[in-house]
Length: 125
Image (cartoon, rainbow, N blue to C red; front, side):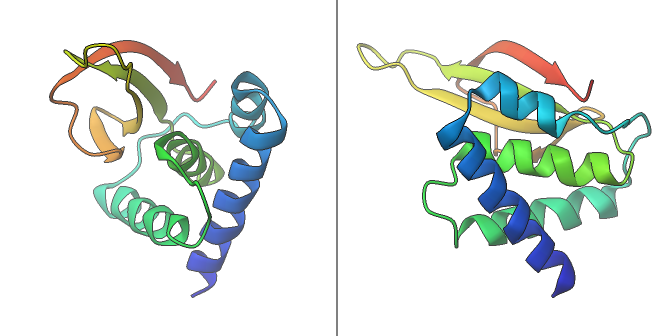
């Protein structure tokens, strides 16, 4: 329960930050921690579960909010990750963007990348 509460605070803070500040500013705050090691699959699953569960209680906790929150939670433990941003292929007139949290080539948050064109990765530092 303590971990879930922590996740809820982080998701709410990131969501508020994205509302009040630019993405780059929030990303710089999230990536201030020194994160260089690889997380275990157990740690990745725990962060994915906690952030996804907390996001249900935070209005407009989009994929970007969740990815940044997960990146912060992993970085607090010293685990490196990156935010991957892409756009949906063949969307016609409306551009649809999506964000994933990736750690050591494992998608932690954001679901499948199928049908999306990769644009950019933003690492832990």
